[in-house]
Amino acid sequence: MKWYSRIPSPLIMLFLIILVVAAMTWLLPAGLYERLEVDGRMRVVPGSYGEVPPTPLSIFEVFKAFPDGYKRATPIIFICLASALMFSLLEATKTIENVIGRVVHLMGNNTADTTDSTVGEPGLPISQMSQSRAEILLVLLTLVYGLLGIMVGYENNIATIPIAAIVVLALGGDLVLAAGVSVGGMTVAFGLSPINFYTVGNGHLIADLPLFSGAWLRTILCTGGLLLMSWYNVRYYRRLKADPESGIGRGLDTAGMQLSKPLHEYVITGRNWVLLIIFLLGLAAVLVGVFNVEGFHINDTSAIFLMVTVVLALASGLSGKKITEAGFHSIAQMAPATFIIGMATTVSVIMEQGQIQDTISNGLANALSGLPTYASAIGMSIGQSGLNLLIPSGSGQAMATLPVMIPLGNELGLSPQISILAFQIGDGVTNLFNPSLGGLVAMLSLCRVPFDRWLRFALPLTGMLLVWAWMGLLLAVAVGYQ
Image (cartoon, rainbow, N blue to C red; front, side, top):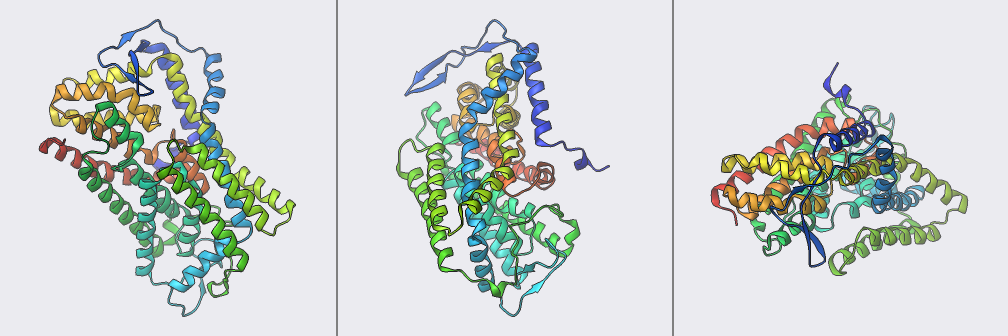
């Protein structure tokens, strides 16, 4: 039996994590750091950790924490549903398919259309584009999604994921490769971004450093990570073209995502143009909000997506019955992911109610205190990787751990900039396989990629990225990164 056949579903993985965390509320001492409000945010007071009366959770309290977890996860759950509703209308009107089919046809050599029963569904068309040109397009797509991850954020980009699926399938790839291009590119870039406010920004605020200072090294790491992601996608594409049966995504449901007719038959209708412009204007509104409106958050993005959905419905020419059917179908497809997102948030709720979050942070600090300088930097990154499974929120993890890690780093000879970089690497790279990260699970669901298939694709890549990032971290220690 191969190792990946033993990988449980994210639902089972999260339930096991919940049981382990619940047991930890009985096994670990409860403890808290003192916190002070600074500029409207609660900050940990370094060195203030102390034990408090234990609050272990009973079986009933563990299950009672589930509704609280889902309540806290509502913003992420809702943006997933809003994105699915919006894309359902673009799918029902064939807007995205017609646009992509036409673009791929124009980018190919246009000699003739063929069918290929070895990739995707039998008898469906693939592009006559040369393989080298297709590989260039895959690299460009990966970099575009990476740029979205750097500039726009994570969940705000969720509506663009199905577009990558249609493009990659049209090039003869599979859904796992589509996730590698979109979810992979976005996750790597967001995690290693030199201007990630949730990790780097919060870290700099805690350390009283100039915001996004030291960007040169983070830019190198982020660029290298994206190029590695691009190479990894192209390598998988070559393997898939050489032997389609070796594809990790073989047999996945591509209904509604595959091009359904020969490429030369695709025409972008006037209604398609109208719907496409409405969709792009919605994405532009999100970009304007992210960059220009103070306090623009995920709920604002959800509101824009819903407004776009209403306008698309009015302009679609579809009957009320067709619109309703498309919407309910999209919600049904997204429902498993939203259920898992709520479970993931429940982990943090249980840790807070059991008052063990600060205990774990203090324990990590104590474990690192006796290590040499280089080893402590790598150890800090590894420790943050483990905590990322329990506290997947980048800003939440920053507020919980960095006020402790930064002073500890000073004692170990690590500048605050290095401690923040170690935290960013531990949090960002391991997001590629973190079942507790709701955005990752939701995006994979939009690509219709089961979590166990994604792990087969992403785990070797994660190892390569960690080696790359740790090389940068060791360089930071060597040059006294400030």
